Length: 106
Image (cartoon, rainbow, N blue to C red):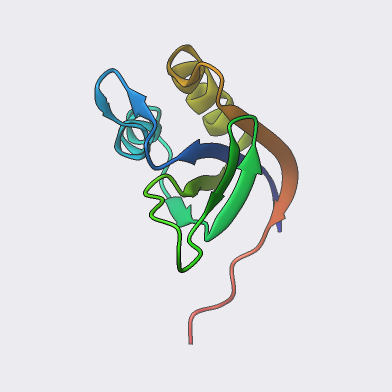
């Protein structure tokens, strides 16, 4: 087991960074910062400073929440944050320490 850092970035589908969809921009910034694995998850509902975003049947929202997550060494996450922060504006970014384990391959 080794120590790592968990990084989570909260976005919405309609967010843009430098004219590019924010999800795509954040993934590219994470890659340029040296992160090896990054996952994007689309939420079915969320609430934030801009109100409620939902995928409810009668809603036509194309502005659902997105969560981007990565786990890496503290040094790599720190480097990623330095790359991301100038581009994130009001978006929420969170980190916390984690213990990293890999299961043996069968």
